[in-house]
Length: 153
Image 1 (cartoon, rainbow, N blue to C red):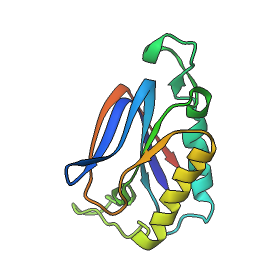
Image 2 (cartoon, rainbow, N blue to C red):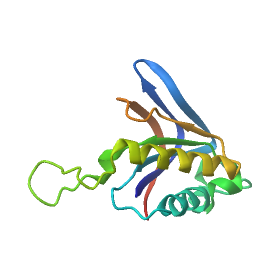
Image 3 (cartoon, one colour):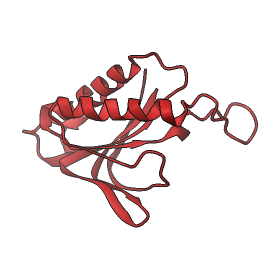
Image 4 (spheres, rainbow, N blue to C red):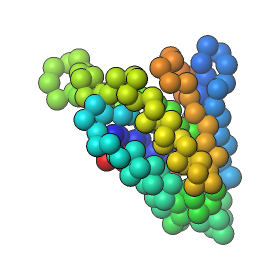
């Protein structure tokens, strides 16, 4: 399982011209692109969810705006999260010029895992918006920093 986590001032995902998920930072939010692997451990989603919620990549609530030191996790400051499934994160590019998607979990296996991550983040008290699984999505973001990390489990 692989997640790309970016701090954003705002982000939204659109499907067929309709905004299906949107977050705005106060001062920052998280945009999480999540890829589920075919060979992921059964509980890998728990580790990824915990890291998304607790990684100290946001300024503390008492710091001045989005430019403060990154000492807080999303749960510490109540950051909004936009969670977007993205099987292409599992692409292998070591050989040739065409990525292989063989490591990506099939949709019926991946969809409940993405839903479990969203529900776990909500259970931690975070406001979570999502994209639409399996849809062609347009994802827009105003990255802050930019500050992006990769989480793997």
